[in-house]
Length: 458
Ligand SMILES: *Cc1c(COP(=O)(O)O)cnc(C)c1O
Image 1 (cartoon, rainbow, N blue to C red):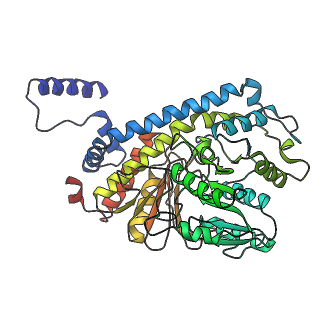
Image 2: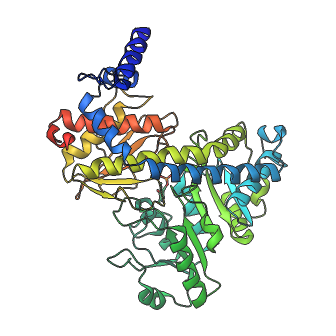
Image 3: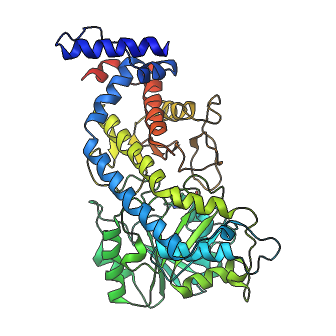
């Protein structure tokens, strides 16, 4: 079969060279493979025409990956990562060479004084809660100058009452929304800063909102503004989904703490759990005393058998992030051309790997997510449904056929079932998989009559 195809292909190439291009162009291997996996010729061809527009953008993504690959490699070499570092400890985990070296590598990569990188940090929310709770004291005030924080942080802060929230410990919260154009409301931010303001939280990524994601440069401008008013205010950046998307990270523009999840970008798809806090020595120390215990801090915390995946995942993270980024750009342009609202749009610059597509109806949101699930390497045969997920205030549908449960650096999509019915799509360990997943989502919409076939031909 393959040989036949090869012959035919060469013959038609020759015919093409002689100017005798055949009218009925034969399918090539990749098209046949796509067809065998349920993607119509029309959907495939539409995807291909979208890709042709994106060559230059993809080149820029590869350049960032080149830079960040070397940044990670350099940090590993300078910290003298050795074979012994890949082995773990048990029990108390004293003198864990691999854990200590990995934390030094993270500090170098994120250009901070120190870092806490632990499997005992269970997720991104936990890392953020830890950073906040360990650096705030009763009577302090927390300020978000970039609007509402990520849904799960509402309970951490106590915006939605919850057991153990910062509010229960007498830590108050204030928020200044972004201006309608997505810019910072400097006037109100200045007014919101009081003598009680101890910590400012800046979320880089849009999360479940349709506001633009902040660039590292914008974050730097905001931090400079805040530090001019009160230099002792701790500036924390929720860096979830932003790692390795740009050449610089927020630690380079003055952030005192940079916080994220290892089952997103920096784990490179290999870390099976974990979170990190990179930042000023004092802030990281406070976090360590809270994670383990006062007096023990960073000195304990057995790494068991997990360090190899943390190192190898970090090493792969720049190229994995690039794959996810290409997927996001492809999805943006593909759905934008069909007339949907997409954030960011198909041509603007990117500062995280999340792509929002507003479908305007629950049926389309569900079809999109079910298409992504059907493209997964794990659990492709199951159908995701909307459910009441803890930490969220509406039903949520999630597509995640991932090797690591809930990992969103792997091809995944989630959507709260509420207006404007936007889907948040992210991840893709490889670009070919991201491409296939997005085409599968479109195919599902086409199959259910939610996208008209005639639109694919324009
Ligand atoms: C994912 C995410 C979080 C929370 O991380 P979890 O690992 O899901 O708890 C917080 N903030 C942002 C911006 C995120 O994207």
